[in-house]
Length: 477
Picture 1 (cartoon, one colour):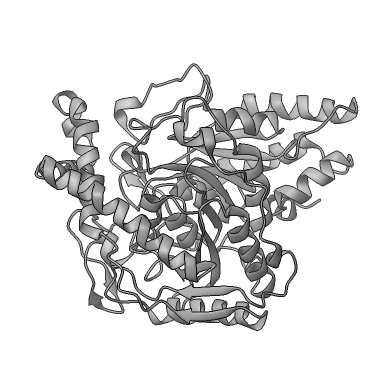
Picture 2: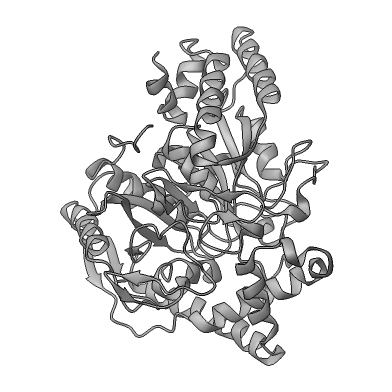
C-alpha cells in the first residue's frame, strides 16, 4: 500500500486490515514514525517520538496476529498522547521547562486502556505550558503551526495532536480539554474532537478532583474512530470520584439509530458570550443544520437569555492557575510563558468572595443548560467564531479580530462557545463543517444531554456522511 494511503487510513480500517493479516503493524508504525520525523521540522507537533518502544510494540502486535491471539479493537494502531498525560518511562513535560526531565513511573489509566486495546504509542504531542491557552507555542519549544497555513495557530492546548492528525501522523490521538483544549485545535486543523461528559473518561491528574472541569478525550480524523477510542478509554478509576458513578457510554437514543431524524429537536446557539461571528463560520454552521433538517430534524434558534458566565469563568480559570503555579515562580519565573504569568497575575487579583461567587455561577450555568436540554435534544453552535488565529497572536494582550472588527480576548472573541460546557459537564463534539474563504477549516459543535456521548457522536457521523470533509488534505500532507 502506498505510504500516502497508509497514513490516511482510519483506525477502524487499519485494525481490520491487521486482523486479516493484510497490513503489517510493523510496516504501519514504521511509515507513521518516518512521516512524523519528516514533518517535525515544519510542524513541531511532537515533544518526543518513541521509535524503539513503538517498533518493539509493533513487532509484538504482529506476532500476536500470527499466533491467533485475541486482539483488541485498536490492535496495531498508532496513537499519540498529549504531553499532559502521564506515560511510564516516557517524558511528560506539560509543555514546560519546569518538567523537562519529568519521567513518570506509571501510565495514566487512559494510556493503560489504550495499550490494552492494542494501540501503539508513537509519541507525546506538543501543548502550551500547562495547557493554559488556546494556541500551541511556548518559550521552551517554539510554535506548533497550523498544517493548513503555517502562519496560523494549530489551536490549543492539544495543538500538537490536532496538527499531527491532520497530516496523517496516526489516525487517533489522546487530548485533554480544560477550556476547549480538544475542540479548539480540532476545529483549527479540521479533525474531530470530543469532550466527554464529566466522569465518563477519568481524569486522574486533577489537582481538585471534586471541582474538576478538565477532561481527557479522543481526537481523530473520523467520528467512528473517536467513538471506538471513547469506548476504550471510558470507565471508572478509583482516583477520579466523578468517574465512579458516571453514565455508561453504551446508550444511544432510539431515534438516532437510522438516518431519519424526524422529531429530533435542535437548538441553534448563534451567540454565547461572543459579539461577532464570521460569515463563513456562520454559513457552514447553517449548512450543517440544513443537512440535519433534511433528515427530519427540527431546528430553531435558542432565544433564551443565558448568562454564559464569561467573567466568572475567567475568575475560576485564572485564579486556579495563580494558586497551582505559584510554587514555581521563585525558581522558574523567567523561563515561564509570559501569557501564563499574565493569567496568574490577574488570577491573584481576584478575591475569595469572587472565586466562590464564580463557583455559584457555574451551578447556575449548569441549570440553565439543563433547562435548554429539556426542550431540545441537542444544542448546535459553531465551535469558534472564526478560523485559526495568527500563530504569533498574544493571548495576554491582543484582541481577536472577526472580519476586521475587534471582538475581545480569546474567550470572548474566539472560543466563547466551548468553555461553558467544560463548566457544565455536558458532552461536546466538534466536527468539521467545511472551509472558509481563507482556505482553513471551519467546524460545528454538538452538545448533548448529560451522558449522551453516543448521541452527539451519532449526529456527528451523520454530518460526516452528509457533508464529507476527508477528501481534502493540508498542503504537503
